[in-house]
Image 1 (spheres, rainbow, N blue to C red):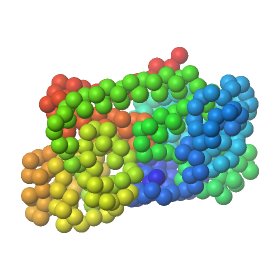
Image 2: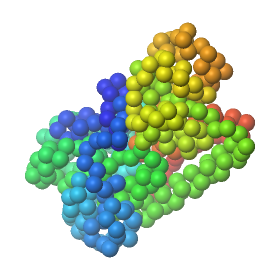
Image 3: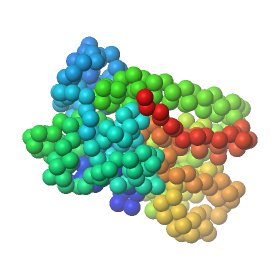
Image 4: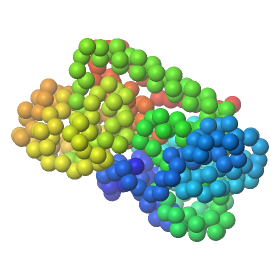
Length: 350
């Protein structure tokens, strides 16, 4: 999992609720974080193996789930007034339930850093980082990520909130599991199954095209670089995106894990074929890093293979990072993807 830096991750912090959240993802990512006894959560009322998120449990109410903190949570009725304190969770809930099921949403969900900005505008209330304000919105479900602080979650539960904690993940496969778990929590098992199937089909189509593009060719070595010289190694969202796009994560190949700050000399040593970055402080990245004389002979820079991909695709902790893999694949294999365009996901709810 991943910890936040102040300059990055408005995409994922959703709202910085000091009482309830300890952080969200991107530089500097680590493989450590809050408690993670289960990958996402499990359905407590059915003979489903612990830690799984299959939608085999009963469909009635009330229902029980075991969340990522190991708590058994009783959900009395189908939630109608949901608040999540993470943009990644906002994106999942929006796909499964639509804007009318939110009691409030964060300002960042309405911003350019969000994949659901248009839908989020339809939610009339915004949520602030104040527990009293959250209580005043009268949510019937508070959905938190795995960085939530257990003692403060307990305080919120004591105040009468129904809280389910589910981890935000780094890999697309784990996002699919989370879709099913959250679908069950929301009472939207059929929609969750349909969403998962659609995402799996789209991922398979990308994988097929990438495999054909890379036939008999070396995989490009990719470095995801930030203006402060943080790079993601193994166990990060970027690792999954790079590999799904048919590349090799140069930082992970060099033995780096999580997000690590490196030097200009290390960039030269990593010798990436491709450098990718997002829009955050991109001007400073170009002027202070990419144009630095010491990097002039780095192949990615010398050959002009430096690409900007929106952070809402590249660093989100939801299934939307499949869009990051699609956009990166277009850059890694331009001939194979010539004329190919990828549309953003749309979700028509009945």
